[in-house]
Length: 231
Image 1 (spheres, rainbow, N blue to C red):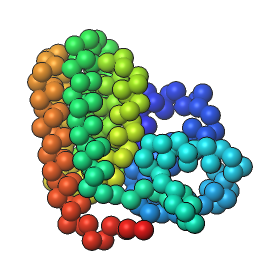
Image 2 (cartoon, rainbow, N blue to C red):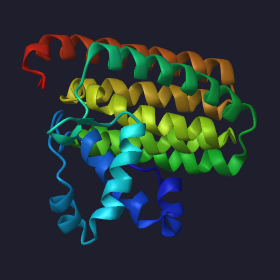
Image 3 (cartoon, rainbow, N blue to C red):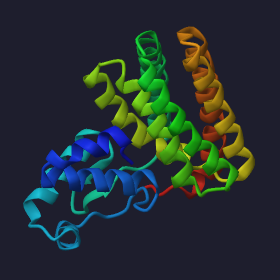
Image 4 (cartoon, rainbow, N blue to C red):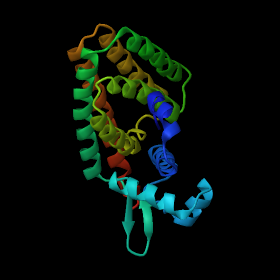
């Protein structure tokens, strides 16, 4: 689920990186469920490549915590757990809080104009009762562009990984129009603070929105816990 800025850079990505990116998207959106088997030959045929780049992509995803390997079962999508939930959301809140301040403190007029357009897509998705992947894709495009302005590429790369891992949980609660409208309203508050170049206010609003998302996703995940695959 790359951002606009990320997708522009993909023209120089390797085959392995493109495969890893597509698998990240499928995992984040739930098309590849926790515990799903990832057979090398079938994936290679799907992507029209040899086994080697698929193996390299899976090793990359394993290092990011999205894929695990078990004896006699091969590679599978990592299971969801309370431990992972706590790890990824705590890390996300910390990274996004810091990157927001840094970005807003040095934001330029052209960046605010770009973010206005990104916000319009969020608002349209909420008004049109878009499906979860569309709404969250627009929301993340806004946020990732904002965070990229902090000029901290390593932190941004870490956040990209945490985002994909956390998306498996946040999608549990962004399933109806009321919740999507509330999430969109939170993004409008963030943008208002960005327009004022008020870094502290942007941080506070962002943190409140993330904590609300975290609590709702955790509640839903715990209620669904018995159905979570354990293998």
